Length: 335
Image (tube, rainbow, N blue to C red):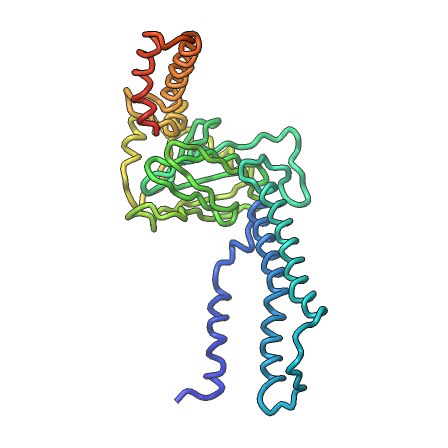
């Protein structure tokens, strides 16, 4: 038999368990993630301004107008201007405030927008150059390319603190979500497309990132280590990476692209130039035409056909008809 005092304390065990949870989402070390956490807090507080009074009044009304409570009986009462103003006015004001906050934060925290500050107390110096990191979501691992440094890594991301980072992201086969809780919100990565994220980390440490969008059998293991270091430590790490003889070229990428789970951290001291652009445009394999080149040639053919049709005002010329026959199948495929 469990003592009565113990039974009363059992609900508190859930709170004790929650105390050990990792609250990185609400206590991040990146300025963008911190602003997003503040936005969540403000939104919850504003909504509680309605929820809490309603819950209290529900209990109060049930108690006050309970049976045999001798409450005042007013069967003909049907309207109160004061109550109407409170019931409709307060929620309306909160919705207006939430709408304003949403509109401002949507533009201010746009992931494509270049950063304006390192944190709430420090603006970004005019001479600061963002660190570019190219991200490829593979099955089921992450590839990080540092184009300016000419190095790459698998399942490990290292960036200096207090330095703006510009992520350019894509995927190899299916849509994924790039998510580092301590840095910023989730950004989709899609094959044949490039998305961006501008963020900054303000504190050194070992963190983690993951995919937050289901992408197949190895999805649950699609995680990577994220390390925030000082500028001096980052420069040292880059030099150590460059000493690695491994080279990531197109042939190696095609092997790396094949689905694998629980992939170990891997480093490359050299990366073939423009490899990321080939991944985005789906033309890594030899003999494959890049999407941007294909679209450019299609656009030229369409413009030429339109110009010829316009010149042959009385009817279509044989050349225009021939060009249309060439363009029509391509347009059909694109649709």
